[in-house]
Length: 177
Picture 1 (cartoon, rainbow, N blue to C red):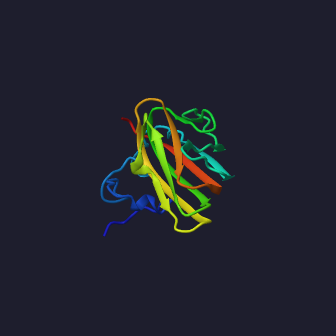
Picture 2: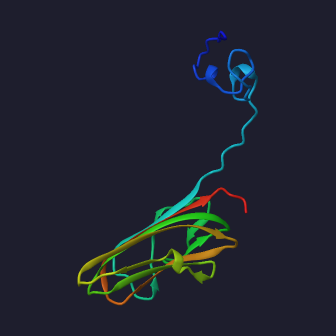
């Protein structure tokens, strides 16, 4: 059994791949007894934003309107008007939820629109069987934005609604094309 040097940090002697005879078994650049570390690049700044609305009545065949929850200071994710969220090129993780009390039996459908097209595959559909029923749903997606685009969530329903609420969060992913 090898005799190990006692380190200030007990993890230093447990580093794998070190050949300095004080650690085992092979050398790695982060082991303090094996030489200096190479400089690491600075991590990229996180880019994210959120938008919310609550206690509203959604309009049929209209985009949901938003208020800023958390602003993106980098300008990659901005609210252009009350309904259009502008996304600069890149990849985005998006999570959203929408709820409302439907006045009568009917349905609520939410459809994301971006890159010049509606995307039913990421939409929400909720049907109720009685009046004054809550309808809710959430959606999650990762999308590619090849060029600047407007993102909207569009509301459709067969009946009136009240007590509507919605939230949406965008996280720009650190990924090259």
